[in-house]
Amino acid sequence: MGSLDDKSALITGASRSIGRGIAEAFGREGATVAVNYHSNDEAAEETVETIENEGSTATAVQADVSEEMEAKELVETVTEEFGGIDVLVNNAGILKPSTLAEMDVETWDQTISVDLRGTFLVTRFVIGDMLDQGEGRIINIASQLGFKGATELTHYSAAKGGVIAFTRALAREVAPDVQVNAIAPGPIETDLLDDTSDEWRENKKAEVPLGRIGTIDEVVPTAVLLAGDGGDYYTGQTLSPDGGDAMH
Ligand code: NAP
Image (cartoon, rainbow, N blue to C red; front, side, top):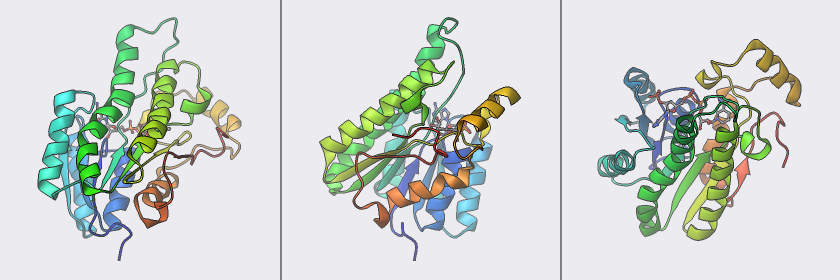
């Protein structure tokens, strides 16, 4: 018996890193899993294979979550294939550091489009059916930087702060049928940190009370909690596996 038996879940950006970790854990908990990805089809297929090898059902679905029609088709495809979506995890995100003085408008727009608009779009196309079902769980992956901000990340911090506010507003709007929560991880060892310098990493470790960069496995249990029975009394919350980086 898994905590997500008979549930179907859509996880955006699940080809790699945190999204993949959540997708695989949901599969182990018995959920049927849709693995959304943007461009990395091989990695998405690997996620699907792992979930299937561990005994659950999964499918990979390509879509750019920042594009309205692609987000709509993503939700329609998964709904048709699985007969509905019980759990949505809005995880897809990008991060391209730049000072505000040097930031071109395209970089700003792209970050807001994927990290904030993408969360709105996929949720927009899922929410009607969840309300009709009378239940559903939405988990938005924000960031500790949505609380504390960071240099060279005004766009990312604004998008993630927006995700936290979106979570709270929607949680009020769709309660008690649908529960909406966020997770705000701290620095986590993934491809997203590929472009960071050694100096950045050392400074970051010094800044985080627990003194290190976290791992994907230290974020995933929070998503499992919020998706299953353990999350029954949570809505509008932002939980923070972040080593104490942002205390709020
Ligand atoms: P990652 O390693 O860069 O993986 C990003 C994932 O998002 C990939 O699966 C990628 O798909 C997908 N993606 C990117 N743009 C997309 C789009 N337009 N449409 C659909 N999918 C898209 O990132 P991560 O570190 O796992 O981060 C996952 C989430 O956690 C993000 O929202 C991030 O902001 C948040 N977060 C991360 C950290 C951290 O330190 N790592 C900290 C706090 C919050 P492809 O493989 O096809 O490119």
